[in-house]
Image: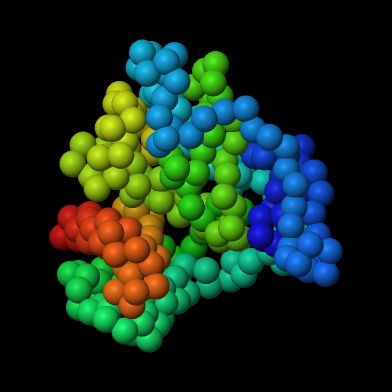
Length: 278
């Protein structure tokens, strides 16, 4: 919550659609926990269903993805030092740290009884090795949202424009291309594990992953030659994060059905990564 407070306050007045920050405090003596207030967002989450206008207008559904791309491009272009986030993350060696940091996270699940271990994720070692071998040598640091996907956006009710990016708890200073890789890795394309909920909510006729990448390139001016690397890293990182819920479910600390569903997403993400690196 403290990270969300800080980044939302820093984004005040920027071109990045976000919930307006009103006030907050990290002093737990006030309410018993850190807290903050933000302005209400007039919008809807597309993964929870579409209003009638968006359900009948395919051009609005296509526009939603392009609007999200514009937002993450604008976020990555902000001068993070100028908005007071110079110490918000550690951009030095950001890419070099990723594989090891998330491998340690995966291994930590061994403390949860009943979890079958990393061997239950085919390809986890191959993907990690590929990421280390093909890591980009340099990047231009910026603010990253850290969890950019359709469940974390609010769309305006009268158009396909973005009302706000929400859920900023994974935000940091790093390589903004990871946000694009994350968006594409989780995009509900035909046959993806993220498509079932999307199709149930009438999310057809979306912009394609190629459209998203092209629009990001045009909006940001960044070189996307290594985009596959960022998609694979997103699959690796998100897959490991979701596996944590499965591990907790195995230990009886989370609903088994939820754990199994998220484990299926983990397997699908690693299948996606393997299909790219082969």
